[in-house]
Amino acid sequence: MNELEALALALEVEKNELKFYLKLARKTTDERARKMFLFLAKEEAEHWDLFEEKFVERLIEKCELPPVDKELAQKLIVEEPETLSEVEAVKIGMEQEKLTWEFYEKAAKEAEHESVRRLFEELAKVEKGHYELLKAQYDSVMQTGIWMDYQDFSLEVD
Image 1 (tube, helix red, strand yellow):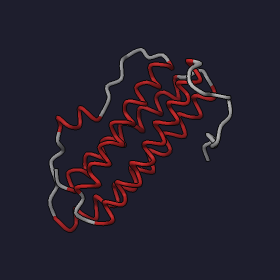
Image 2 (cartoon, helix red, strand yellow; image 1 turned 90 degrees about the horizontal axis):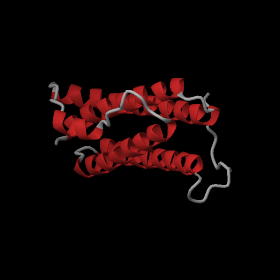
Image 3 (cartoon, helix red, strand yellow; image 1 turned 60 degrees about the vertical axis):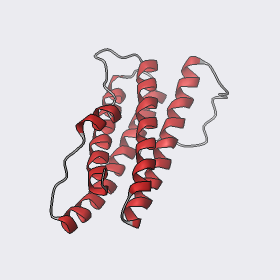
Image 4 (cartoon, helix red, strand yellow; image 1 turned 30 degrees about the vertical axis):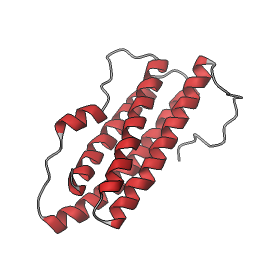
């Protein structure tokens, strides 16, 4: 997969993650979970903006629109069932974030331009952080792992 194809796929992934988290924020009754989902949605929207900027830059250079690998897109975009509990939603989010950060790490290694490589590397770290946030929520809900009801970060949305 070339760099432009990876950027196009990243745009699709970020768009779907944004829609997923907004939908979950509307559905959940737990205020802490709602704030977390809104925080994640805001982050995904910011990622979409960053990928869009690099995509347009590369597109202008190449003057061609790349095809999106639909098979790979299906693997990276987790399907959401009709009915979804908070625990199921968090598990799906964890799976989505893990797939995304792994894809971004791979895309960074294959990037042709330094700025695109850095963007994929940085967002891979952020997506991994999203996974950790969702894992902490999962541990809290399931009362597993080490969770002291202490947060090292703010879930407040500006």
